[in-house]
Length: 157
Image 1 (cartoon, rainbow, N blue to C red):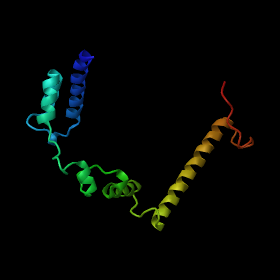
Image 2 (tube, one colour):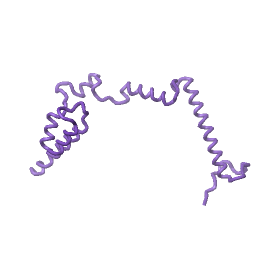
Image 3 (cartoon, rainbow, N blue to C red):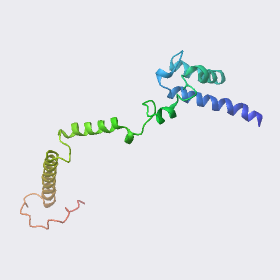
Image 4 (tube, one colour):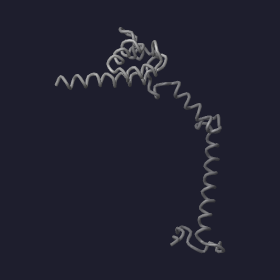
């Protein structure tokens, strides 16, 4: 049992330290660049991992400077869900306006006119495509429309 622990504990420590090193932002890394820390952790699993955990990364100050304190205090340091972030929601509204090419929101008359015009264009395009399919199904020279309108075009064998 002790032999297994002597292998698994350093392995787990190395894996944790390597993933932590790779996922840490550049501004949170101390003393040497991120790639060198990753190489140290891989080449010297025990010493590199322990040195990374002790000296390689800026850690939160014990006693209230961590993520939970930032969230509970309403500060901007913690992660916020997109639906709780007013800046993100505002950016969505801004990009939807840019994509439409219309500055009026959908609830205003200007936005509804744009939607109605778009719908009319789609309907006209659909009619044109249906007419092309009917012509292809009827064959050349039979543009009289004497066949049933709702029947699918004959299958080619």
